[in-house]
Length: 132
Image 1 (cartoon, helix red, strand yellow):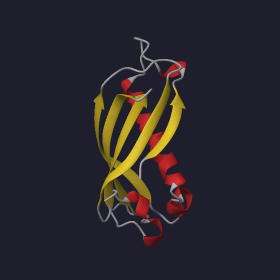
Image 2 (tube, helix red, strand yellow):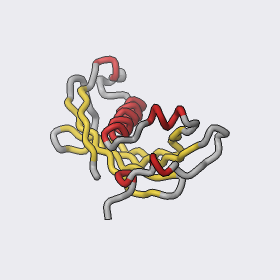
Image 3 (cartoon, one colour):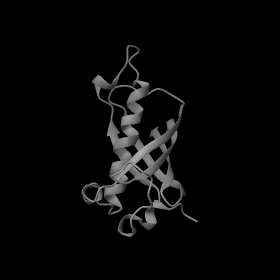
Image 4 (cartoon, helix red, strand yellow):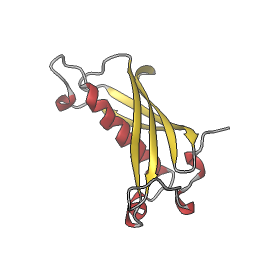
């Protein structure tokens, strides 16, 4: 499943060169992942109340082109790997079909003691697995 969400670049997200600051792209990716989880029915609030968290453990980012103020961006998110207690999302930020930034983001499920643990059954949703 490939999920899409939109974001319009705001002026305060720019650096001194009037481009979106590199670190801001990480915020875009985070926003898009949470929208993905919400849209697939992953109840993150309930997940947290049960003592679990999803942690980003690794990010590999490639910056291809700059975005600037008022650009309408599309952020796609799709799972490319799923293990017992972790997975990887491929995320791409584009403008008018042109890729601006891409990332492979590894996540892990952590229990209330801070230890990796398999996603509980009710949260181990089919949409978290790569399409075959």
